[in-house]
Image (cartoon, rainbow over all chains, first blue to last red; front, side):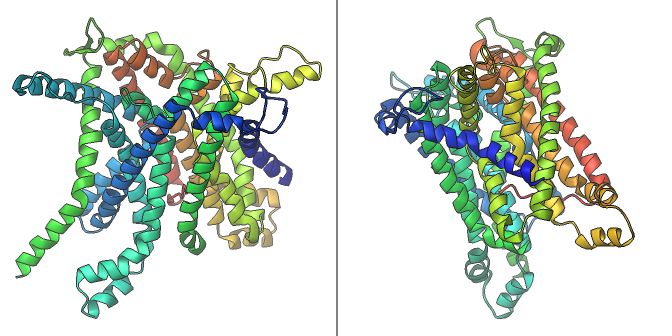
Length: 270
Length: 288
């Protein structure tokens, strides 16, 4: 069994290690290491299209993760106080947001927004005094909306689990000592849920930063990093893509390890 | 005074859940309704949508039968392949691994899942492509090996991509297993094999079902793996959808396929939950 487990770990990590290794290859070969070089990283970093895609991904990732974290945490707190029926509706919708395949989320958002924008744009055009009325179109907004859907559900799930594991007694003790609900929240509850909120943010950002399929449908004329990588792969495998992939891997690695670190006490007590 | 407080409390609750509720409604419920409406509509001559109420699109599903057949074959097969490899790993992590190393080993399984699937799939494209493993085999004298753009490559990519998602729920259910049951079984003279199949396996079934359901559902909507490793030869529903929406622009037909896909997902989920509920309580699974 040990052998099998070892093999699985080798299987999981060999491809990742190899792309990173060959990102440092001086030649173009994917099987022969001809010498150490960082030229592909330099090439990638001076590629204007790539940098533009990276910037777009950062904008989308940070915005959608911030919104998802704030609203998701608020929802997790609020759902403690609603009727069981309302909670069941929310739970079902959050579950749907997680379970429905990304490709369907992308399509549904695309179809709905294109229809709504079509109507809105003709209305705007008819009332706009100037010659060039502003046009609503797919872009950052639609990607953020679609990413926020999944990530808000994710944050809510994580924070809810943390709230459920909190002791009620400490909250009761606080109010017995005449703390107002606000004081109790900021002094007692918030510090305890904060690590899971931060972990939720990091995971939300990671998801958004890595997502290809949803953005592929709703990005309009914008290019995110995964869309750029996908398009380059179709033009052919090059060491420059390896260099980009290596950087994306390292970024995700740092994010996910930080998220796990923030959630460690929960794992330890379980 | 009491009434005022009650109102205040309600307002705070509303302010807390309102934004999330609105987001879910505007960006999940409404788009889904729009998609269903499209599915019953007609294709406009220039592509796009023309209002109608017709079952034409659903009647036409047969023309994409290959995508459905491929997906409905390879998704369960892929999930089962993941299970076969994942179970021993999860068992090792939960039961055999020393507590000192357990956290690290579990982290090493979770981490790849949260790194870009695109990059991980690209890695296999790289390895299976002409300049990768086939080139190495050529050096050994084995020529003309074709690995990429085959169903086997897609299956490999599936197992690689989704193995962590299968290991985690099984690990969670095995880790919570009451060890005293295993001792009791041994004390009563059961052989390790019958303890394993009589106690361990049944008690880990909720985890197994969760894993199978999660992996199958994600695979039903998969696009990247068949696209990059199947090279257009192994076509999934996801690939058909991208084609219909972004290339041939037949949105009503694409919507009908997407609606059908959601129905399939719901059916898979219901079957999985039925089975999971039959065996003990379901458990929350940590994906992080």
